[in-house]
Image (tube, rainbow, N blue to C red; front, side, top):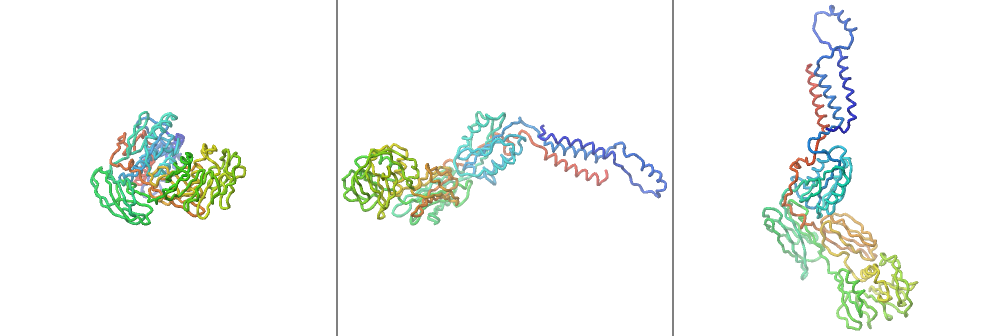
Length: 599
């Protein structure tokens, strides 16, 4: 047994005071008599009698002494060690991946894990250093080496559910590193997954009970003859056959309702279709809740065709080809100077050459133009030197860029254009818009510069391409919860933000390098809004539950300690102050009964 507040034992000095009060106490017995005349002399003797009398047996005195002793002992905060040995450090790891949202009795697996962890913290020895780790998509240290139990309990309550995929085994290496700094430690993992704790002084507290669950794993579509053709994949993770109703929506309009039968453990594909008119996103959902609600809905985005056709007219320029090959949604075609152009393109790039007349439609990009055109006026060549970037929306990631060129065309900056690159005041590159056509001109041959060897070159070409043609703001349109989203804002965007399906607002920092968007915990449709001078541009992407890794609710993970169902895992003792106080109250009640009845 330990006393965590031994100073309280000083109050034992009050015990003799209680005894003295009984010694000094005068006790009289009432009797009915015919006259007090004969007792007058006795009364005189009592008045002068000393109060110090022999202490007699008294039940009330014994009860009061016992109550005082127990109360003082409770103030000393005793801890009874009844199993195992004490430890200086307690490391608690709580799994909060998507599967922990599955039902457990009347709550969820995560809530059960938090309840058990709270019971463990409350019954740990005073002074134990507590570390708390949440294990979602990545292990996160919520609290480290604190002896404040209330703070630890607050942190446990604050652990939120997530829809992400993760592996709690990733936390083992973190726990091993922490345990090396501790004199003695215990590590307790609350999870619904299997674990291997070799080399760790710890145990797994399993919080998985089998529950029936049907997941919607995928929703994809194609567009044919103006109609949507949809494919939905569903899996029955339960142990019994079920009938389910699935509703398919386009935006918020019902497109179809399907009744499907799924055998235990079966995965099926469901075909559906609907009108494509004004549909920007799709989702399907189960009409009944089951053991895991998070995977009952799946989303998809209907993107308009944004494939941009680009024609490169050049003898050979691998630098341009490589730069445009890494730009999403761009299909690059090549042609030799003088060849007849077949078809129409969104962007025409003329490298070192010019046609007799420029195409009537599409954006124009001229590189090292040999002569005058309706886009630019060339006045011979000038000597090269060091080229620097000019401050502009299209060069906001290249402010410190400089490179060398051997020579460049002497091009006068048109009235409608903005300079991007300059050499001693001369224009080395510009962009502009004339008669609703976007244009760009680079006044030097890329082969005659070291610009293509710098890391800023692909950024510069991407920015110009983003100005001249419409390119996607993201690499794909469907993600899993917890997955990073690569965002490529338009180069002339003044600001941008992302709004989740839950209405949460996240600003996108337009500073190179653009950091991936990581706040994808919510399931649903996200909207990227970019603010441009010409107006707002909106695009969408969908985030779905990772059903492939988190929806299997059929397996049950048993705890390595049979006592965890009562929250007793690794409880080596118990603080008994509360029980002593309850006992003091019971003694006070008994004392009252004894006093009333005059024992």
